[in-house]
Image 1: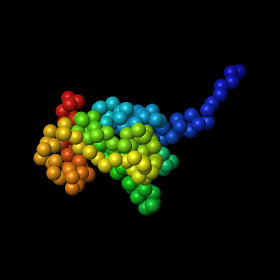
Image 2: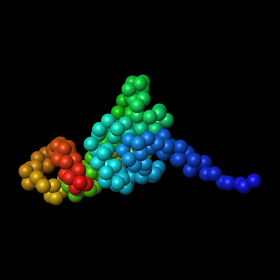
Image 3: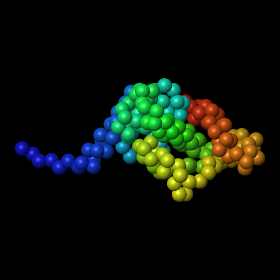
Image 4: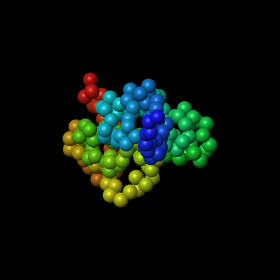
Length: 178
């Protein structure tokens, strides 16, 4: 008979990671580790998530619901209203962070503050992370090809400008992958 020491903390992390990422391989072709950050994702997985197709949407909901013990992404429509709103808020935060990471990899955006948090931490603690100390406003860089055309608007409405660039960033990132 062999004795084996099992870390309860490790078992809990593994269980949580399985709930959050157990379907990701099938959905987007990559299974993150429990502590994986968006900046650690392979480019193809990041691009898939940023496109926000059906499987990517479910993958992000898998994380949001998985860290809350609510099940896979498919159960989102059946959640009670309060849980559904909480999940939607966390999902939208994650979508933003995925797209900002994509823009940061292109060099178009200074890396966002939440970049050091794991995907699971962002899904679970999105409010604290978004409101955390040291959060800087989004900053488009001069590497962005149409920077001169948006320079003036950046001072008035930086977030709106950054968000308006997302479709162009998705295309540029996919072109870079090809």
